[in-house]
Length: 470
Image 1 (cartoon, rainbow, N blue to C red):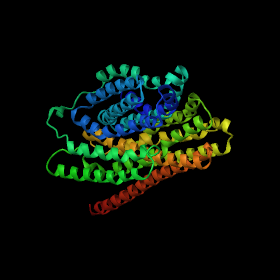
Image 2 (image 1 turned 180 degrees about the vertical axis):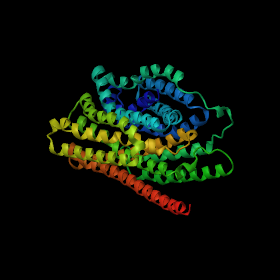
Image 3 (image 1 turned 60 degrees about the vertical axis):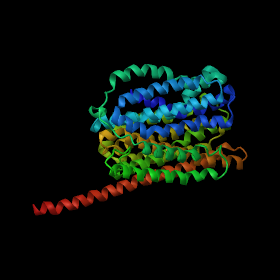
Image 4 (image 1 turned 90 degrees about the vertical axis):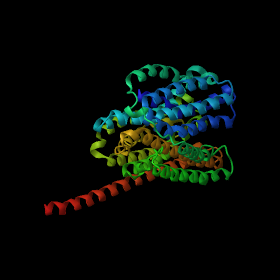
């Protein structure tokens, strides 16, 4: 049930990309409205991840999962029934809030229900869902638009969640564990911390997700404002804890090296990994004239590779640790490099075929990154803080994805204008930015390995005199 919920929420991140032309034609939505359909979901999704995780930790994850599932199903139906642009944008904002409430419960439940190697397997399955949902979104969207037509097909991109949610609901009520024993105790919900963190995340995301629509440099003034809000959040949390209250986020989490390194790495990874499907869809549909269905089919090799590698990597992460993640990152970089070569060397009409091998390699690598990193990053986190920690991890991913799409999209559109509509050239220039983020993620992983080896060597050196003295 956890995986079904994650699949629904993450699918809606990518499935809408191929439906934008259908929404524009069928609903008559403006360019600004279309942008808010995309960015509004990202903004409100990020808003509730940490508060939702914290609430699930103290009040029971089943109740929050079920509530989020009901809300996500209902708001999906509301999106599909939209009669005008404003209706759709508001429904999409509400859908993002529902997704932000549901998502952190999944990692919290995995932490709660599984231990050791079984936890690695569970996160492996979750990683497969992340990769498959991200890559299959365009395909499923294309199939629905092909089946129901350009004018109405976009509605079924949202309606597809409704039967899935209705089927999953009774199983979630029956199979998921109830509230913890201390859920009826009095807890501090830290409303000031909730507001500061929520504002900080939204203000930070806003200029990135609106980068193409909000012209001019004024929007970037929001970045220092966001930093100030997040610094204020940290100072408040420290003060709140010193007074004997329960802060929303236990800042001691960031003293766990596995958590701090893993959070940093995955944020950079999502900044590099997520924009691929954004610019690839633009190349195939707007540049090469592919239908929504054919553009979606192109992403299938990535989904296959991720779906194969993630469960296998989940089984072996406890044996190999972060070196396995480093190998996965190398494969993703190689896959992205292969995409560059394919677009550069292969004639436009055949580029879809040429992308099969590099996307398969990239998908295999991605399956070795996302779920193993989640296992390692949350390995030292106390179970009672699993939802909060999972929410923080997701916030980092969403911020990384927003920054990546803004940076890659800016280069893409800039080169597209300079080259007077040369989509392959624009994609090649943009993908170098993605590869830069991926290399940064690899460097963070290597730094973690170096620090870990030094710590192990220091610990071993300290044990030797003690053994000699004994």
